[in-house]
Image (cartoon, rainbow, N blue to C red; front, side, top):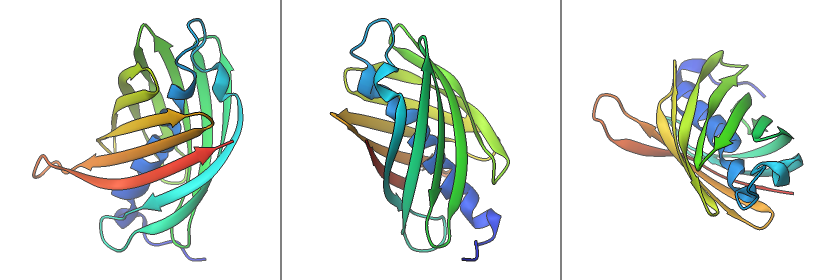
Length: 168
């Protein structure tokens, strides 16, 4: 399967990566000492990625979480017919806020994550050298629903780029 050129994917794939990683945080927010403990292990699922130019594409994803204290490391890989990405997140939860960093290996991109976590949802800002946007995550039982929007720096408007669901 041939991959499309990187430039049309930068705005679409990177948000999905961030979305998949950052969003899993909420399922464990009820645990006071370690909000990430319920994320440990293997997750799979998929969703839709919408490129800047072109039609939406279905992707399948696999993620692994490792928690230590109030921190979590997430590694995720997703692929579709024309899109692939491999990303890592290192996040920390403290007093209702999340913070950390992300990197995407295939496209050599990286950035920061900041936001809030309350109940079963996360609201985060994603920033980086090749992507800026927002993500929301809602957790229900053993599932994450992740939605990501990308900031169009020219107009200041946000556009949907990814919707993903991971499960145990």
